[in-house]
Length: 199
Ligand SMILES: [Zn+2]
Image 1 (tube, rainbow, N blue to C red):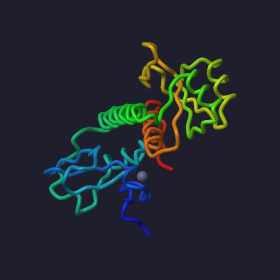
Image 2 (tube, rainbow, N blue to C red; image 1 turned 180 degrees about the vertical axis):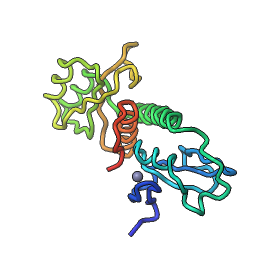
Image 3 (cartoon, helix red, strand yellow; image 1 turned 135 degrees about the vertical axis):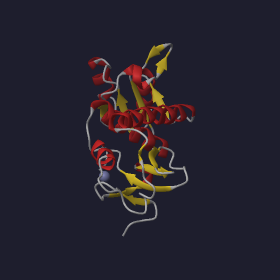
Image 4 (cartoon, protein in one colour; image 1 turned 135 degrees about the horizontal axis):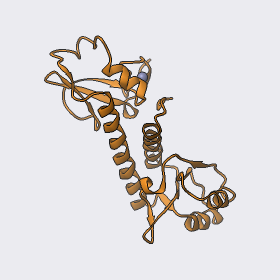
């Protein structure tokens, strides 16, 4: 049975937590994505995958209750994908910054190593695409969790140490870390063109 916090994807009919889905709202006949899920109006949800987003935009007939006065989408396919990529990046920045402020995120090879030596258990360790192989394997050898190499480069990650871009960070187990992981996946998917953001 579907929980209160779950929604059905209007494109693929898959059921997922609505917090991990993209909400679409009909405002006076024009349908746009509602990133914060707060705009009043009739709405439907899709997964964040390119397939599901595209599926909605290309849909011949929208669900009748939602489609009232429908005149079109606020933006086309490519524009919408660019919008999702941009918003995903903003959300990633936001949750990385919150994680930093709250001490949930440890950045840089040195600090991660120090913490690992003290026996700190991290939930995730994430490396930029352009982190050197030496640094990568150096850290990987010291942690009990796998280090994930992303397709996002240092500059896009936006973390700095002493004025230089930092290519590796670790996260403790927390809700914030799950948010970082979620938006990291999204940014990766929308940068690389991969689909299947869900599941
Ligand atoms: Zn879907």
